[in-house]
Image (tube, rainbow, N blue to C red; front, top):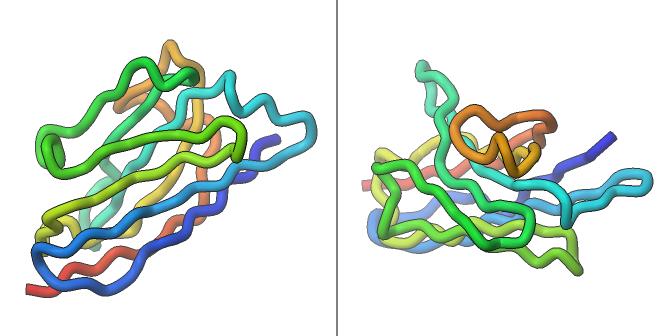
Length: 124
């Protein structure tokens, strides 16, 4: 069983930056074996893939809407994955969820374990 806890959300203005964190824990968790990812869900919309990173950090993927503005990174020693969000836009307003899965599934179809989410609100 893997527990994921997101943090770092908040209310910011357009053009601002935020860094989300997702800390993983669980009995015998081998964090360094999991791909990690971020999804988001805006009110009235379906959950969508934002970014993903493989277990060793060697490959990343981003949604077209955030490419060039968001970066994803991980610290396997701290069992934490980060989402650095720059130049935020009102369209980025959503609940952001952390997820984990195998490297093979890293991307839009990943999602074996989920966190509870953290709210990001970008005002215009």
